[in-house]
Image (cartoon, rainbow, N blue to C red; front, side):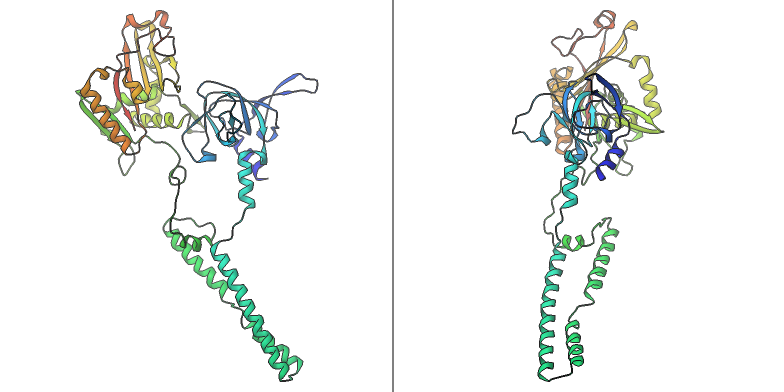
Amino acid sequence: DAMEAMQKMTGGKPVPLVRRKNNGERLDTQVDSVDLVPGDVIFLEAGDRIPADVRVLHCTDGMEVDNSALTGESMPEPRSTATEKPSQSPAEARNLAFFGTTVLKGNATCVVHATGDNTFLGKIAQSIKTSYVKSTLEIQIEHFVHFIAFIAVCVGLVSLGVKVIQRAEPADMIQYTAGALFSQVPEGLLPTVTISMMCASAEMVKRKVLVRKIDAVETLGCVSVFCSDKTGTLTKGEMTVQDLAVPLPGGPAAGMQVFNREPGTQVFPKKDADVLMDIATCGLLNNGSDFKMQEGVEVLSGSPTEVAIFRASMEVCGGTGAMKSLKAQPDNDKVFEIPFNSENKWMLTVHGQPNRGSMCAVMKGAPDRVLKYCTVAKDGAAQANIEATMADLMGQARRVLAIARRRFAPREIPDGGRFEGTGPSDCNFPMKDFEFVGLYG
């Protein structure tokens, strides 16, 4: 059926799982998503499309899924193993993941509890397939047809009565009555309505509107107020970095300059690449997205925010080749990472070669959390300029992230280059005096 076809389409690779044999022994195997049954324990990782409705048994900290297939919202949603309240809606429960959605970050061990038509997406598909609502046009035409039928029957009966009074021949009586009855049928109604709708559809196509149901044209004409959620409906449902804000050559205290995508080409100006190189380099190094080449096509997976920053940074740097060359440099090797979490609201990576004493840390996250580790936190003028730029970007409905960098002196590098810690309270390296690099909008 339709759900099996969807499972085959989304099941790009076999699903690793654990089952129990009849004798109770553990069986580690892999099966296609269409062969999953409730009770199977499956393993998911970043980039996987979830093959069934599952309950999360174990997951890494900060696991996120993309539920845009169900909700239309492009923002990732966190997942955890914590038990939800009985009153919590299943669609909003963070310990459940649904068929058709995607794992953006982290790994998980889950148990299958619904497959096929019994999944959340399957029930939506069933409700759409079975529900049918008559359009305004259908209701009006049906009412008109019933009215005409009543008139035709009345005219036929009157005609029959007249012929009976005139004592006409039976053949003449039937012919006259039938003629009077069928003359009331509006033969031109069907082609007239159809042609009118086709003309309206053709006009809408010229305005780049796709008409799937021709009777919807008339219904749309009756609409006085139209409400729509923009995410995934009026937009592509993908995040894109539209603005890059960096300090002027004199530093943030001298002011900030904002670079936007060019209106026609929707790319950042190449003439400004040198000015934007620092923020682009930091955006590539401090990034949780995964870049792969599949059958000659660039594929980026991960959090929508991380993917957007990676794409913009790669574009500024000069494309895929320049990005690979930049990340391949020994001074850019990632040796340590503190992943983003809801408590810190920032992500930190450390890059370089400990044996050469050339290392730096890059921090990216919520501006208020990142700026307190920067030198600009002690400079009122710099802080005011950054906050003014942030307010301007937020006024344009931008989500704003800040990024900063700190180069370590040889004496600040831990012994053996072994960086440790989860935050400023337990890190074995300095977590202060970062250099503010810029803002992503």
